[in-house]
Length: 317
Image (cartoon, rainbow, N blue to C red; front, side):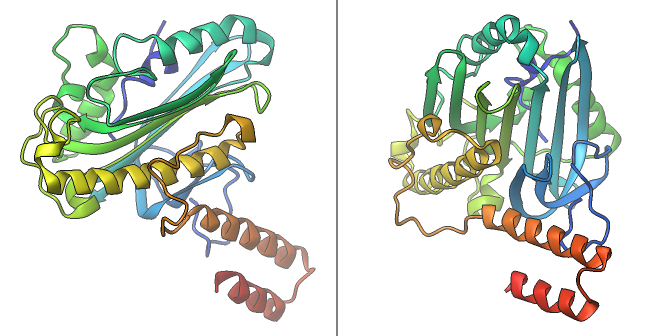
């Protein structure tokens, strides 16, 4: 089988909706390479995932018709500072699983919980792991660092380098200067009680862009962010503590994006106290929804231009 989400979930890729725009895209899965989205990823009118401010450039897309009506696809976006990626966002899904759930769900379970590398299982280099699992339903979150060189050029001869080929070509063609490491969050969710789909998502940012911190060591096993070493590096510890809180907030946004059932949600109170003061960017998705409604009412003639402008200002306050 060609490149599959079952594998590419753990071969993490490194790497338009503008609320003032008149033309509204129904979703961002149709984005083409080198096109940009801003501030959010829209999977549908009801599924909007907030992103950090700025423009996100699509650097890699893949889709494949697996069999029957099952479609797999994955997109990887990057936020650049000049020619250097400072953050990435990757999202993938396998859709239309309902008729084939008995065949596909065990494959998903094996890919998430029993992979040779990464996945939703205890790893020495993971800074945080938490998951819900019941039957074939799961909700998983992992936080750690991504060693860019290790990812782009795996040395264990597993064949995983095939899955980074298009990214390596993009980097070479566009003279991209890659950072050494990213602070990384990734997650996986699948529940037939919500929808017949499997979603995987990942977000990463360089320590420099996130906390103005320059890493001293940059390989997965030597980095000062490694759980076995971080106690010896107080400043790195503070950065990781901040990143864990950020990751928890991202996961809450992911759960909202997926409309996760209450009993399936992760308890992240150990890293995200209730009094944690952080902008919940999911509100930006709600603002966008309101603006879409107003725009549709204005175009239909239900609102005058003056009424539209007045209502828009109220929403944007």
